[in-house]
Length: 331
Image: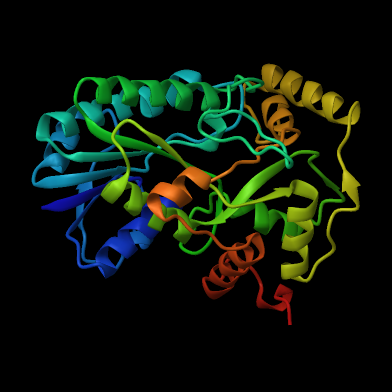
């Protein structure tokens, strides 16, 4: 029987494909027809063309599958494109889960820590912390609704678990996705960092945690797969040091942050296109997304390394693939 990986060209999905192949597993990869072929080039995987919500493609992908690792998702932090996000993150995920239930396949749904409560450095959030303070942007709303759709399917008999990764960095970030932050800090050397923080983790640690959840996670349970909790200021300083560039001098405080967000959202309404810098992104950047992975450590034997090691791994991969200049590397 095979493992089906959705989002197989993305950061987590591509790392999962490679680890599964190293373990001798048969892998099927669901990829969009327009997806970059490079992430799967030379890999012994069965490619299935399609996307979440494509019923015919999903039925074909599910044939002969005993485990589904659902890494696909629509990721954009902003106020717009909620219906697009719901089509993938809610309806598409629910359709795949229904098919997995019908086939009797094990199902691991990759959610996000952004659907959970906010934490503090002295009190990181866990899976049971009451949720409050979310920024109601398209990504957070749709991923939260998608989580509920998966829980509804587990109530109907799906053998499924949910995992909530932190801020992932590491190799095989082709797009790039979260590694884009590292590249932009290295390239633009921003003097101001966001006031909040996040939980930084090597994507390979998360991938191993996903496979542990597939093996021994309790059906219907959620597991945080996070890492080292850092302020964005300290994270960006680490990134700049690795790149050999100047780090931020201070943080972006109110009222400047609010004025920038208001201006960006006003410009969005005028031109009809939402930029990456928008009110939702700025508000989320001011929050502390600090998490405890103690439950996963206890039940899944989950382990994670330092944020600095994750940054090093991402940087070295970007350098080796020509996505950043070697001269910026730390000597």
